[in-house]
Length: 530
Image (cartoon, rainbow, N blue to C red; front, top):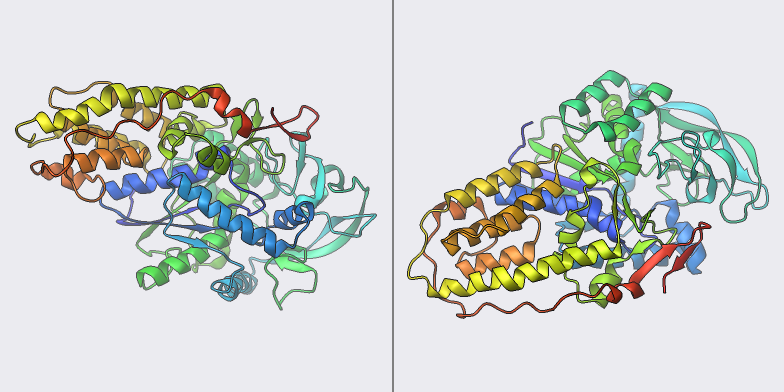
């Protein structure tokens, strides 16, 4: 499908109830960064805009366990998550705090305007539903406050989406509901909230099929449309969230991913001086949503429901990039269950670099569903990259100073890069295939080192930006690797040291990672490995 010259990528906003783990880093945010770098290398104007989800109820749950206010909790983790992303070389154009003074009022107005628009078109309907309340505290049990079993796969779950099967549900559907905090039994009360449903369910599935969404990620959407017609929540119970004078006390506007993205579009419009929001029909900007498979309803269904209901005011994402869940040492990485390796601990406490961790995580085939990794697997990939760096790359860089003249054409390198970039479009990307393409090129040095290094820089730019930047600079090119510059292949200036910098570290011992490995105990309680 067509990609406009201007592209906006909106990776799903992380919840600031903790720092990011390798599942976050290796999934949505790595995909956003890789795709953005590949598009920029081809000359597209790309912006990556997101922020943290300060209004998510999990913030309140984290504040409860940490013994501080929700405001203190989200602000601390909001800043920490920004550092985590930067440490993994995830480049963002804007990092939004929707509850902060720069965005709070505009963010609320956007949500109110869309809700009012859906009411005016008749797409929003006020419906009765049964909500569980804890008998001991009287708290409405929604989001992080409810525990039970998924009505679809019957595995433990909470909130409104199962992290195992990816299915969406409403509170009254959850099996064996109870209070997550106290195990209190529940009492059911009838409440009224606003909902919307797909006006044309078939158009939703047709659009995602045409955009290349893989069947494994399409399946939960098809089941949601079949079971409840694509019904999505617009308002809900709560006292922490997007409050509005148009709603009764104790209710908030649903703080969903798509409207967050539309707000990112407003920020993009202001940043670029564009005439319209990128989510306006025919805006001339390709919009890309990126999220994990446990958010199928917010990412795949809600955008179409709200766009259809807006009757021409909004368009859904042009492309959606869905990744499977990363499992570490046999269990899904989880912030709330403290299972995984946290980016801050790994990248600040060990010798592992951002390029090395990116390289290791790129081998998990999350573009095709859930994938497994382990301490041993991560260590193996880091050491393979370090060995190649020392034995192959650095000698090739040193030989540059011995060459009498430049290679004036780089046809093989350009073709290899173009083939790899085709794997990194917003339509059905495959990051694992892209890293294999880089490895194939890296293992077969050409007789002319300069052309081989050009290819290495071009193929490396989306995946291993620090390595690619080093090679590109040693070749004498300004800026970052781009196809346009490589096509011209100007003579190599001799303005760098004769010897390339040596690799910083020797082989990584898996034992060095163990202090930072957190494992959920078999009984379901979180624990830290020794």
